[in-house]
Image (cartoon, rainbow, N blue to C red; front, side):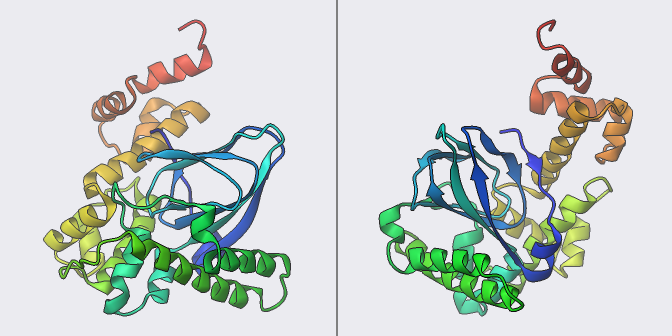
Amino acid sequence: MEYFVEPENRQLHEYGIEFFPEIRSAALVTALSHVHPAVEILYFKRGAFRVGTSRAEFTAQPGEAALFRSGEVHTIFCESPDGGLYYVLKISPQFLMRIFTGQEYLSDALLFLRREDAAKLRFSADELRGEAADAFERMIRVYEGRDRDFFVRERIAAASLLLALARLLRDGASDERDPGLNLHAVAALYGCLAYINEHFASDVTPYECADRLHLSYSYFAKLFRSLMGETFKDYLRSVRLSEAKNKVLLTDLPITEVASSCGYASLSYFIAEFRRAYGLSPGQMRRRAADPIGT
């Protein structure tokens, strides 16, 4: 799935959460395929929306919700001709870890963070009925009644919602815990994702990140793969190539500059990696986008 890396905005950085409505007046792509370190929860209020990830896709109806884990590529498409409405709650992994603080709650935090094939993506209206639906509606009331205490009340409401969803997630989850996982290491790793997304153009390495987190390289590599479902090298490559593709299609930068601005010192290696990922060289993709009929 092709996607772009969405940067973290100021509110999410400062307060740990961000909540807002997405309104569409017609059937169209609401959110192109994208990825970010934040956990994202959607609550659908009006209209039908097609929700997709690399794992699955479904059509969400009013009263349902979707959960995207940290680093999970996702896209949303409004299927209703007359549009629709849903609310977006983004949560930084660090805020989530503060809610589920303590080693005994690590397994609850991982329900929202760990990317596994069987991880729950969709919440039906029946599942949400009661505590979870009430928590979503409270989030909406807090958003609509913004005052000087808004950011405090918003975080309290978000914590209540996370607790309600955690209870639903526990029902279908294994109670087994990985004794090798450390609460602080897990929280730090997700902070490292934001660092990777900001510094991918430099020579960022897993050794550097492990050192920043005061972890051994072997433990960091194991932790990264366990929680992200891919190696550090694969994640960094996907971030770099996604940004390179955007620059190839959306700018007129020379290919050599695209390569260097995305962390590739070797032009030939960049072209080989790009072709392997997208089936075209950067130049071929740019020409095809400029003249799709002629190619």
